Amino acid sequence: MRIYIVTPILAFLCLLPFTSQVMDFSLGSFGVWLNIPYTGLDYMRVFFHELGHCATFWVFGYPSVPSFDFTYGGGVTFPLGGRVWPVQWAVFAGFAGVLVFLFRRDGFLLDNERRPLILFALVIIALHLSLAFNKGHDVLISFMGYGAEVGIALFCIARAALKMTHYGAAERYLNMTFGLYVLCYNAIPLQGLVKSEVMRMAYSMQKGGEMAGDFEKIADTLNTTVSAVAAGSLVYMILMSLLAFIAILWWRRNEESGL
Image (tube, rainbow, N blue to C red; front, top):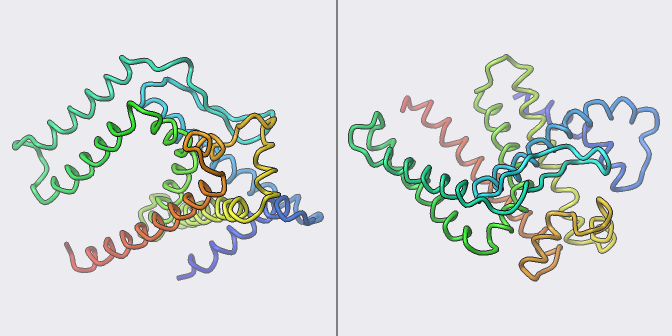
């Protein structure tokens, strides 16, 4: 129970430097010390953000390399060129291989283990195919920086809640703190982008003001507003959090019943 009291406090303290920038207040000399854990956690967040972009670029046939942006801060991931169709066909071949493995009768998976994996694989493949040949994949590539952040944050929270860490209490506390930090870090500007014109103007001027924000790119592709994209992203975070909470409860119940 202690972890559920201590880690929200730690996440709150680590978020104070970011919150002070958004809300324009000073932390004084206290901020110097808080900047140390804040910087460490934020580089971890940026790493997973850019990894999300990079992985999604690759699965749609665009070789890319993620990097930190030491000019404007944060990170940046660009494709190394246009779409490379041999890479895309290799992804399709990988999907086919996964389906062959899951449907083979002599596999090591039992039927009750196989069904949810088959369903999950079919959903992912159907989603990929529905986006691969239109601008939908551009939207997903732009979204999956934020999407990966939320996914990794919830994964870390689940690891901590289910005691799946391997290096003791310190790793468990770090996982929970990082997960809570990332969720709150994203919730603060998202609600600002939904409600505040000033926040939207500040967002549009990041990295030189050349439509560098992911949500701006999505809004432009979908012909909608940044506030609408931010609202949808908040809904995504809430739904994913609910699913993670249900999955944690389900896992614990199965462990207790010995299934």
